[in-house]
Length: 240
Image (tube, helix red, strand yellow):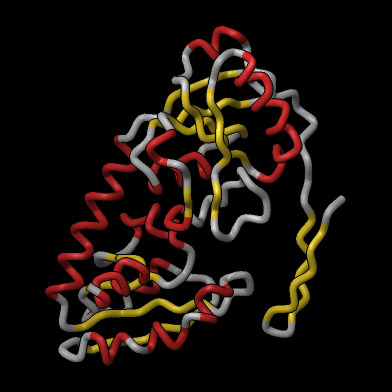
């Protein structure tokens, strides 16, 4: 079984990849519902089945490609937290076909693209097309949070020291550069392990929060006591 050891913050972490044994062959009726050009994606549990799935789809006249995610180990692997770092052949892709159970990973595809997302669950053999209403609601809240940031005088920057959030710790220089990039604003750097939404209410003077932890924290937007925006969106604004 593949494994990876990573030494972070003096703590050794062992990542063990578990492989699903479920058959991912799609029923012919399900294939007929899919568009012609598909970009395939899956969680790590189903990486070994993707070549077989590609062969099946191409046998029925589909054109296939594999998702490329910047921090993924394998072609086709999708990480639910990395929706802003996905690459796919957009002009030659009609839709994504995600293989796996649950919605956390395919929802990342919704957030990271404007393509239709089809989800095939190898355990139930069900195929469904995800609606875009959820992602559109998140996008509207992100736009509102950006406006809140632009008008805010006092901004709270959430920094986690939790092992595994290595992107945060590597990007500390950029995070602390916000004071130079937006000199008209007062930044308060709030450092913690796990981010407790209830504790954020103890800082009522803060008008907007910047999230530097997992991007998918924004899924819980309604739990923040004030508007919240991901650090990457703020850095894009600073570079504009």
